[in-house]
Image (cartoon, rainbow, N blue to C red; front, side):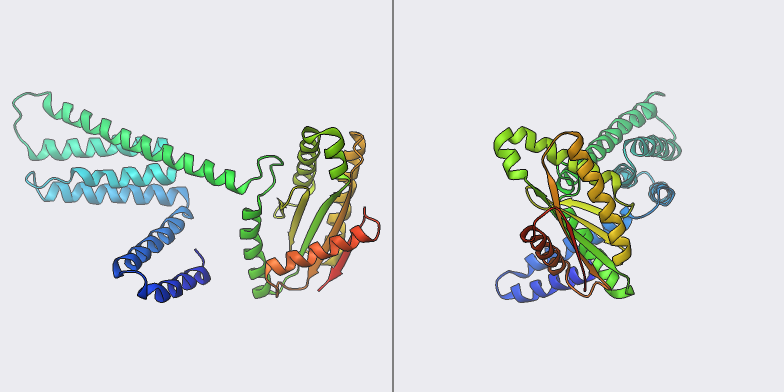
Length: 313
């Protein structure tokens, strides 16, 4: 959550005080805190996460040892295991499970000097280990599934370019940084000429093949760091950070050539109308910038299609 987004959230909570009981907006603060904490931890390097996991384990094990056998710290061993499984994956969670079971066995063996049977401490350690790996497996699988769902929302299933949602998130960041640091941003809006006629005459299956090929070409020939997204049925956008008019002309000239070549090779009667808006700095909201590029594309449509129109703002 950005600082701006969080401040809006705070204003929302302030306005909602007359409508919601205190427990509601207190819960909201907790959610916002946990969300920001999760984002911060997710940006740490792997070795930093491993180090934090081991520190947590040592702290909990030490507390367990120094408080004696009368006070149990059993459930707290799950904290470093859950931490490792969530942020580092199944193998890290499994490793922490082994270490936690061994640590717990050592503490119990040190504090309890006599067992009725010699095998009891080993059995206890084994059963605890099973609980640990079950929790680790559950959390790592949950995180994997959440990541898959997130990727499905961020990637267009048909064309494999970014979704509108992912584009909006990236565009907001790019235009914000452009405004702050004063670098140029270019935004191109691409519409397929003749797509409706092809779709109606040859069927939706052929139309899907065309869109997939367009996605392949855009992903293949855009620069590293550019964002390609599908924003409509046959409409695509390309966001170019650090791109003035000269760079935008090079990129979109190359893109259009590759797109037309791909269509010709497959004998598809498809061309491309492209509007490119170049902003010397991102002093417009990205939604307004997108509307500007869209308007330029429609100017190309009205003047004969199959061309690129550039304009600097």
